[in-house]
Image (cartoon, rainbow, N blue to C red):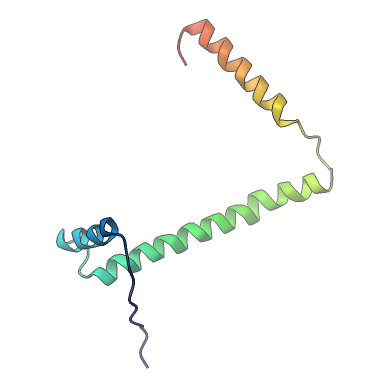
Length: 95
């Protein structure tokens, strides 16, 4: 049984040239290898985002939804950051 499937894709000229350049440089043996590597990188990025959402974002959201933490309004946080930035800038002349 075959483990691959041929696809026909359309790419902008710049992307097609990028693939050809990768093969021409010897970094990859075939155009298919370039595409497979790109898809593996996309899978890894998606997995990293999913992990971040599950482990970091969701627990905070759950605590906020349960009202177990005191929240600071965004305008207070941003205002404080802006004041600290201006004070540092005025005191040293640079950031």
